[in-house]
Length: 209
Image (cartoon, rainbow, N blue to C red):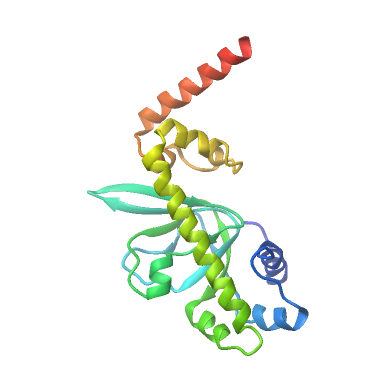
């Protein structure tokens, strides 16, 4: 895990969320007081199924996967990497138990805002208006991700979903084990191997022309 102090971590966070929220010096001083860092080793849980998710996280370095057990088999539904928010959004908003695990794929550093601190900021005279908009924009991001994921399974083939992963620019193939990628696109590792072989053969043929 990279060695970074809180000042460096919060500086990355401040720069990363500029598209959603900006602060003057006084506002940042107040806002940063509500932030905490969380550091997890590989394969540790950010949140466990059956427990309430009490933190809105943002990945500074590392990666996580959203997963669950279905009929005794583990299923991976989503991946998140650096510069992405991570939470069990329904559990965080409603305080109901989470229906899935969020596990680290690598040693991971997060900046987190607890539900308690989010409430405090919504009532803070200096921050309330900006935090209300910040929360709304984050919720919109999660809604868009959900719709994109649903659309992918409705209108795309497994091969197209795999190609989308390759084109995402996040080096997923190197960083994520094959079985999790197969689960994510809804096929077996054997079927994924066939898809990879077809793509390789197609690429080789194109290069020979």
